[in-house]
Image (cartoon, rainbow, N blue to C red; front, side, top):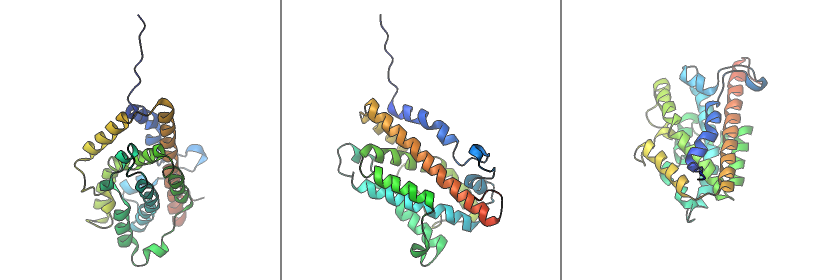
Length: 235
């Protein structure tokens, strides 16, 4: 009797395909010919990231979320992709409050995206606004990360900079139940979306590309921080 191999749930395929990328974000080793130096995450957790350096990293994320959440407006009424639009977790307004607190008056005029952030935001604008699967890929990459590792960052930020409100509003998700409930629901939606193999593979590829873009952002920020300090690692 012939046996059949069941195709794993899409959320599982996605998680397994991206695990290595997730583990490799913000490396401290000198991979790919890059000089070894602490990454942004290491500096934060070790207490070595100044308030100004934290502000640089934190506020750059605003451009990414503006692009993603502008794309979301175009999918709100879509029968399928509208299921993945969650205004309750959107981060733009929170990041704008944080930027005002961290950078002070006139922050909107002074804040400009670094090259890697501009590339990341442009990719989202070009892909997520035009292709529903692209929107799903970037929403998955950003929001599920925010509700996982992002909450670990929140503890470190609160301890290091003594923020209680603005400055770390990005990490507050008052509009949802628990992070686990939200993530489980998002994964259930992925599994129930009915993506065929070709579309699923395309979404996975876009998630992998989003990880690369996020890694490039962290890399450029680390280089800027170490370069400003006059340390080895700036290019």
